[in-house]
Length: 207
Image: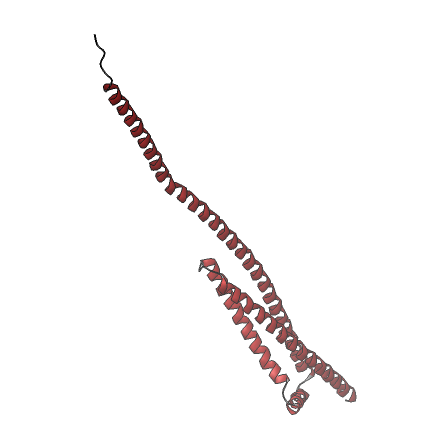
C-alpha cells in the first residue's frame, strides 16, 4: 500500500510540475499573441492607407479580418485559462487537491489532454505566424507593383500632356506662317504697282 502511495505522490508531483510548465507556456503564448495582434494592426493600418477598392485588396482585407478574429478567440481562451491558473493561493491549492480524488489513469488522461491542447495552441501559433509572413510578402509585392503602375501612369500622362501642347501650338504657328506669306505677297504686289505707275509718268518721246 505504501508503494502505491509513493507512486501516486510521485505522479502527483510530476503533474503539478507539468501544470506549472503549462502555465508558463500559456503566459508565453499570450505574449506572443499580443505581439501578433500588434503586427496585424500595423498591417491593417497599411492596408487602409492603400488607395483603390479592387477585388484583390478586398479579399486581402477580409482574410486579415478573419485572422484577427481567430487570434481574438485564441487570446480569449488563453486569458480564461490564465485567470484560472492565476487564482488566489487557496483556489490553487483546492485545484491541486481536487486531483487527489482522481485515479492515476484519470490523471494521465488529464495530462494527455493538456499536452494535446498545448500542441494545438503551438500549431495555431505557427500557422498564424506563417500566414502573417505570407500576407506581408504579398502585400509588399502588390504595393510595389501598384507604385510602379502609378509611376508609369504619371510618365504616360506627362508624355501625353506634352504631345497635346505641341498639337495645340501647331495651328497657331501655321496661321502665323500664312500671315507672313500674305504680308510678303502684298508687299511685292505694292512694289509692282508702284513701278507700273512710275513707268506711266515718263515723258513721251517725240517722233
